[in-house]
Image 1: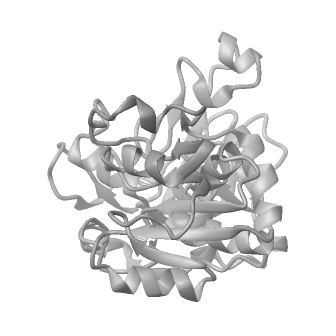
Image 2: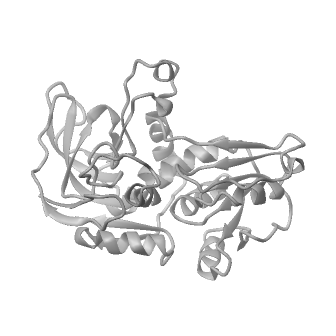
Length: 327
């Protein structure tokens, strides 16, 4: 099968002909219908996330059709459509798994990092960690929901019942959350790179009540803020923007160093919360909610062999919404 392969950190992906995976006990083999291109993929390729499996097939926003089920798997079945997210396996026995915090498992397997992912024509996945998808769902539009949507949703829940919610970094996750927040009657304040008028216009078109540069104060104090951009200096900026008792949620898996800041930005019971990975329950909760809310992703399809171009475009912020590879 064709696959885009990472051989060394910091190197461009290589188009290769590799063996099609075989179904092992407890696993599925899926034909990849679409695979989103996520900023986490950049962190893996650029070495911000250390020690990935090499060689590696990246990609963890996978929508696929089951073509083979391994021994012991009765559901999903061949022909079913599934989503394969970042969390690909957990031990099930550590203290975190036992208390229901599988996202914090001590020995997890992550798709497109320690496990081969979806920048390929076929992928193998642990059946217990695949999410059921309705057969009529558009595969390309659904792919960003598998990480931008799921991690975004977990971050959104961490922000509590904020009526005025700030989103720093208006990319794939933020454009999904804006639609969910508007569906629930909340107000979104979108913060973008200075001068990125396209992203600000995009945010307003999706229903944001205000959009401006991340260096700008919002017109009124926020109840909470979520930071998706991997820029540590945004943490004190967001603390300054939230009201007393407000919360700042860091939704990324990687962020540059947070600079020192005056204690009075944190005082008055403001808080900072990080988000790590996701749980299967997040997917079971979010995907039906996204359907009810009528969420539509803005997608930019690329052929599989153009994965490097898609990654470059993501790194440079050349599109709004999300890039998706279509084998």
